[in-house]
Image (tube, rainbow, N blue to C red; front, side, top):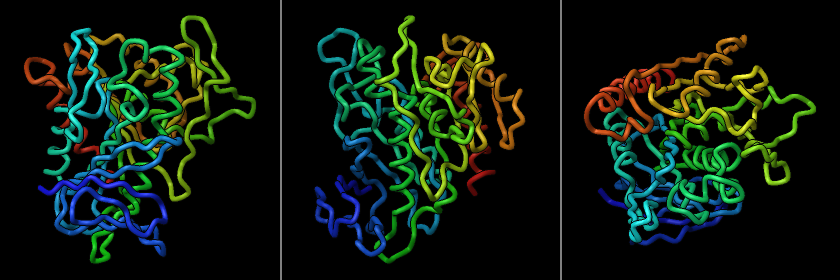
Length: 331
């Protein structure tokens, strides 16, 4: 398949691409034009003042296809490695998706979905969410609560602008879902937060080891005027957000989603207790959206990226459930 690495700026006449084929934007419609021969491409967009890369895969030449945005976990978007043997990955193989992301690209392609994989970490200074990046002040640069949802919406807006070079719209603007893993699952929660639930006097803060931060913490990303995501899936998310939405286990949470959601939970996972509280909180609300949750006995955190044993069984089953969930809401 042909891969084009391209950078574009809204309202520019022509983007600069690394190959002869060109991806362009048109000033009159603000569309992003993709050659009909292209199946894999990488677009660069600005999110919160940072240029992030979004690998996009197109299953075929089609009109108004459904799409899924995939939010990577703490391992990052790209294939990477630890070159100094300190247990923390520090280099990436540029433009090569991680094995999990590559699996999801193929899985979504096979089932007729355009897929997009925004990379939140590397442009902001880290390969993965590890070491000192897990704590303030660096964690605020890649926050799942108030940074990565900007990346999700930048990707949503990008998908809505895609057109083939014959003028055919590529993605159905109202049939775009979002899936996230671990830190990415937490980012999905914040992305589909129903902002009408914010109390008048609410203050956006986060607490780390007893220290409450406020000036460094921002409000969630604004939902696009054209509307948000049509469905959301969260794999073993954090769900606590360091009290960003209050505490789901103490009855102080203000969180509610604006679209149908599915939550996949690993039994052996330090994040599970808070996620169970999160699900219980949602089930206690008078929601107008559907909330589905599944516990996978014996499975551990990150089970979706494992290829044997009970984790592989959990991965296969949760992907099967995820596909049914997406098909029912996006097709």
